[in-house]
Length: 257
Ligand SMILES: Nc1ncnc2c1ncn2[C@@H]1O[C@H](COP(=O)(O)OP(=O)(O)OP(=O)(O)O)[C@@H](O)[C@H]1O
Ligand SMILES: [Mg+2]
Image 1 (cartoon, rainbow, N blue to C red):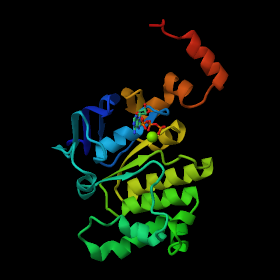
Image 2 (image 1 turned 180 degrees about the horizontal axis):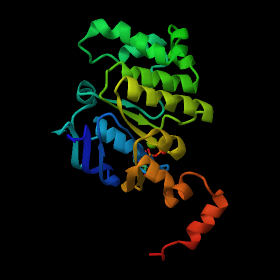
Image 3 (image 1 turned 90 degrees about the horizontal axis):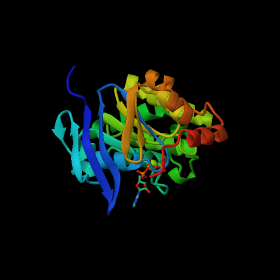
Image 4 (image 1 turned 180 degrees about the vertical axis):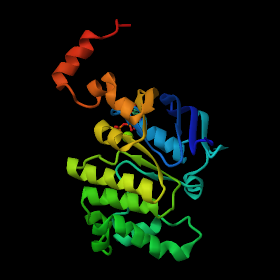
């Protein structure tokens, strides 16, 4: 086994005095889909931003193929093969669908292949081809998520960071998006790091997973192992009603400090 494609060690990130990432370490091997599960405010988005250079960490390292890249700017990350598909998509609403895709290729030198890659994206998302000349702001939430992924692909990433792709989507659309993530991983050889609150679909898709709570990784393992974990079933896979879960949390509570 060679070096992991992405390796994070003891990462710490702050918003002013607030420590949002508290010593996170994780690895993503080339060719894998890795998911980071976590509830609201766990630090998932902050982790993504720190990996791709939107935020600088206070401590720790982010290595891509063994090379330290923490503290570099986002353009550097994109040029070196790390592309983020941000939470909330952040497409350009007043630009056409196709121009949004073109924007994704802004760091590329091989301009001649861009047209072919736009067609490749349309192959995965035929609806985007139908809407190619429409303003991106007129797309539905699911279509905007497709466009955000498509735009990310246009940079020819080695690794794609997906921040809650299921956010605001119906279960059916969520399934569709994750099926395409799986195909892109296989067919286009894009390694994937997906942060999600939807543990079921994420663990059904991923090879490996981590669980994040309050800025820390509290669990990690192969996806099928995590699916069997009692804690995950209880807190993330909705095996119990919310009332039962609350009662159980109360019964198992640690003594107050
Ligand atoms: N701009 C900010 N300024 C100050 N604190 C922030 C800021 N953004 C996030 N935080 C805090 O940092 C912590 C982690 O937030 P983050 O957005 O990374 O969580 P998340 O896991 O992505 O949550 P969600 O599922 O809601 O997207 C939270 O406590 C949050 O309140
Ligand atoms: Mg978030």
